[in-house]
Image (cartoon, rainbow, N blue to C red; front, side):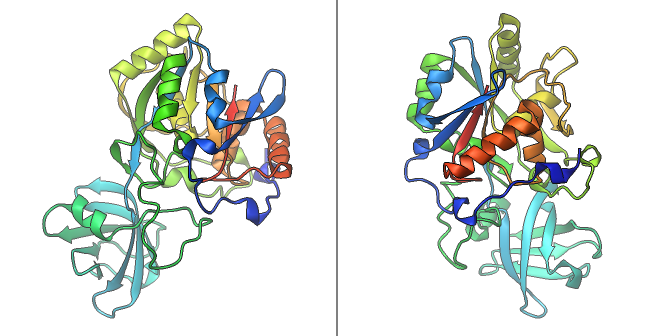
Length: 344
């Protein structure tokens, strides 16, 4: 298949710029894979689609303030550093703008010199390596000067208060390390979590969303695309629940594509999930044989993206694109702060 086969038209005004005041007020398009149909619903009705034997699996990663705006110590010029992944304590791979102007040894300062970054490598690769220096805790310095790394299609006024710092987190976020939110989980409220637990079961895993999740597909043949590895951890208790659910004939329902990728990356050929810290190296495209997950709660994804490839693999390209066309006609809200789909 070609990446151009995963394109669709979306009016710009359907890209959600602000979250809803109430997290669980989102609309939800429910997809039936067997019947190849869909139903308009509300996220608040999620429990109506669950069965007592089901297990909901969520990703409890927490977004760090990974976007840093600073100045070159030598010239005062503006520099943006976007953290991607930690190599070792206070050494990170990062996207730098303008990266081609910064040579090894260049220093970028942030805030009132609470934090500085030293560029370690030569220009050339998309990712550069930087070492941070600060007095005291790096996490505290990052919290003081960093900004929530929103996707580029969400527009914010430069210099505005970081209004998204808590709203762009799931209510169950615990483990810092992601550079983007697992956005399917943004719809949950404490009330909805309790409602799910009353109806079915719920467990948590951790996958730190990295650059690979949203990196553009730069090849025409989708089978040649590779999604970058992301670190994840499945607690022993969670793996036991997942495996018990599958053996008992219940449905494992992943909240978000990140959870889906972690679970499918962690299993053997029979679908048994292995606990512990691992790396998700799996690239899911149409034709993939799902071994663990039988249901997926997910937001609407960008055209030509690896995430659209993943949901198309789960429910077929034809069904997903038809459902997206329906969502556009019905004026669903798209992307990170938008509405959601439940695919069963």
